[in-house]
Image 1 (cartoon, one colour):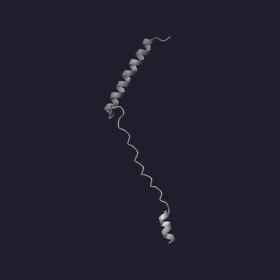
Image 2 (cartoon, one colour; image 1 turned 30 degrees about the vertical axis):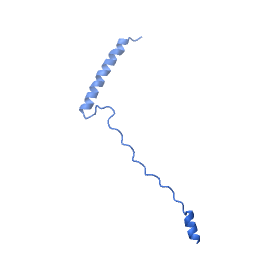
Image 3 (cartoon, one colour; image 1 turned 90 degrees about the horizontal axis):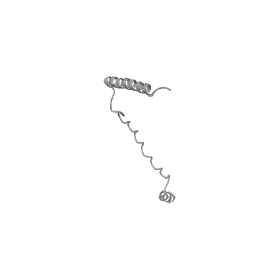
Image 4 (tube, helix red, strand yellow; image 1 turned 45 degrees about the horizontal axis):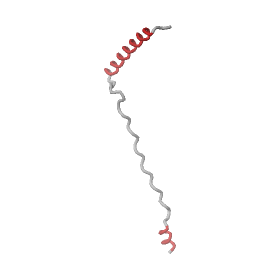
Length: 65
């Protein structure tokens, strides 16, 4: 069975490599703010217009006269 200390040593090594990579990324223009910019919300869709009745009752009465 592998000893725990072996894995702890690997974890320390990986953490050092990670921190080095993060510093290099930030030095090359990366951000350290985490989430970064928020996504732009999609443009609001225009409201749907209510369909007009082709002829209203009043118009029908006027036409029949």
